[in-house]
Every structure is written in structure tokens, then in C-alpha cells.
Length: 220
Image (cartoon, rainbow, N blue to C red; front, side, top):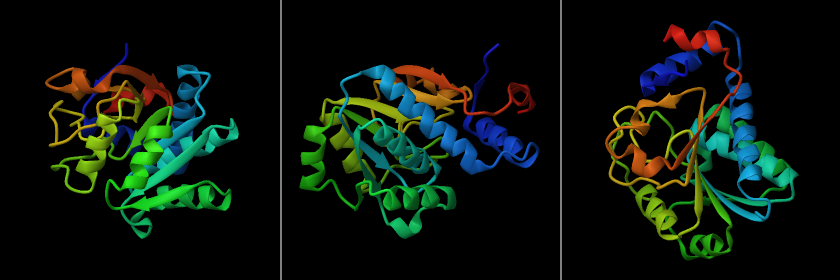
């Protein structure tokens, strides 16, 4: 039977996989990003241009991996890092460097600038990799403006793990939230998807296996 977990439980699941089973976090990130790209291929065969909005944490790292796999299928994926590159967390920073060395386009942004809007106009799909399940505070700037820009774009949006701005446990909004057409979530669905504002913002929920053994799901 599939489980529906809180943010705390899903973090614990990841910890058990990494600490008890010695599955490196960067392997989980690689699997997550690949699954997102695969779902993109299923979404539409004619996707040519994608905008990937990445935060500086692990969710952003998933976005970098997805962009790399999209590029391997000749899909142009522009990555926007919201914030400073120097603030990228370890695994996310590693995947950012891989993208740069492979020649992928990345842009560090601190506002919803005009050139971001121009890129959005050309995009077939937007990938939301800004915040993950760990968000526990009000969404501030520049994130709020960029989330609003994504929502106003009327493009198809795929959120990675959880729509950015949605509380994964309570389903409440942290001020601003990406309204996704699809949410590709990892290992298990999250409680917040089905209560309060969750159903309005997640779109179709797809649960992706990223390599965590099923027997661990019942240890949290």
C-alpha cells in the first residue's frame, strides 16, 4: 500500500536511505532529475524550449540534473538560479558545475527581470525547482515575484517534488505558490497535496521511484 508522508517523515526516509543504506545523496538527486526529464518526454513530444527555475538547495539540484537530461534529448533548457551561485548547497553546486562545464545556459537572477519574461514567452514548459518539502517560512522576494511571473505565464508547469510555496505537510500556502499542472514527487505522496490548498496547486501528482528501497518506507 502506498504511503502518504509528512515533510518530516520524508526527510527521515531520505536520512535512513543515506545513513543506514549508504545511498549517496547525489545518487538520489541524479535519479530524481532523470525522472523529471523522463516525465517531460511523456508530457509532450514537441517540447523544444524549457525554462528551469532553481533554488539554491537540493530541489534546485534536481532541476540542474533534469536540465542536463533534457539537453541530451536536444531540448533547450535555460536554468535560472534564484540567488547567488556561491550559496548553492553541496550536491546542487556539483550539478551546477557539471552543467557549466557541458556548456548549458545558466543565469543567476535576483528579480523577475525583463529578460526572464522574454525567455518565458519562448518556453513550451516551465520546471519549478525552487523550494522543496523543507520550506517552513513565508516566501519573500525575489522568489515571490518570480513565482507570480510563472503563474501569469499561462505555460505548462511541472513542479519538482512539491509546488514551490506549498507546505508539504499542511497544504497551506507560504504567501505565494507555483500552480503546477503536474507535480513529480519522489518516493511517496505528501500529506499537504490532499488538504487545504494542496489539490488546487499540485495538478496531476506523479510519484517517482528514485531508488529508495520500499521496505524503508515503513520505518518513518
